[in-house]
Length: 391
Image (cartoon, rainbow, N blue to C red; front, side, top):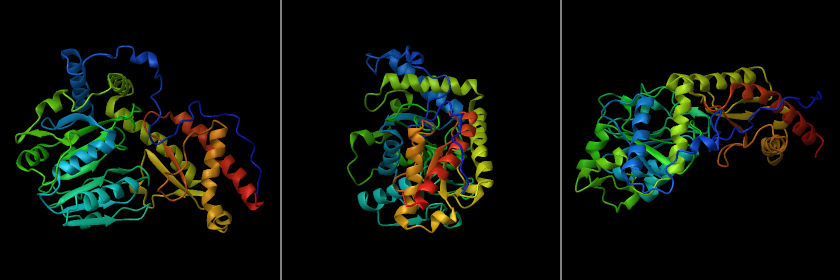
């Protein structure tokens, strides 16, 4: 095979991790100097700053005026668990799973909550379940964007406006990067550490009026841990949606989130971050189209993520090697690129098929994606040569 010279230009920022994701351009610890550290989180000034984060989130995402936003514990996972444990049990449930995290929600619903009327609508990595089979008179649990498969829903047209059930959506790798039809969603979760490049451990939970009604008219038959409780004596805990968090938040992480929101405004608000994500994804898409050894894991173009892009190796000579050898190729590539400081953390998720996963969300610079491409070709050539030599 043709020998490729090692590229001369490295990405200025080689951080392509899918979570925690890279900080926004221009980020510095100095940006956090106004954090209210060492202050009581229920004091007037700290509560006001927490409330500011909620107000700015609602404004940025253009949420309907009657939707509520809260900061909750344990990142996106905690927010999803709060929604599942607090809202499910009234109706049958359709849960859509096509990658690692959505399969975890199936386990929670079936094995932990032990709900009986559950339809687990599964699809292999790279595909979506048949959305036409979803019954919106049941509660529906799904991800807008599958972070570990690179597959997203193309739109929300399959969700009825006159649905009787609730839609619970894990949108952590889609928020601020993709157009989301909020009026079709009743409980939506995300975390700061995805597209905004914030710090982890804090989740965001967005509720529609329909979700609030469910909370106020339904008491789950199972015990609810304190961290999951959103009602008191049958009424919504309004303070939770006005800056009174359930447990102690990190004021340093909060300041980091506010700093990320400042940056979003600089790049053009929601339209700007979506455009940046789309432009980054387009660079990779054009490269895949002209590169024979690689392809998208997502089979249908309309369902391909613009943030967590998952790739598979389709080179026939590599495909003819033993499975253990073939499956190790992307890991070897990722390790080589890490050692060269050309790309950090781009191996596929441990539960996904062997491959590469490259984050192209808004905090990534397009120039860094462009600089990465020759390194991907070089790394593949290096590893393939070693594999075919038996090394």
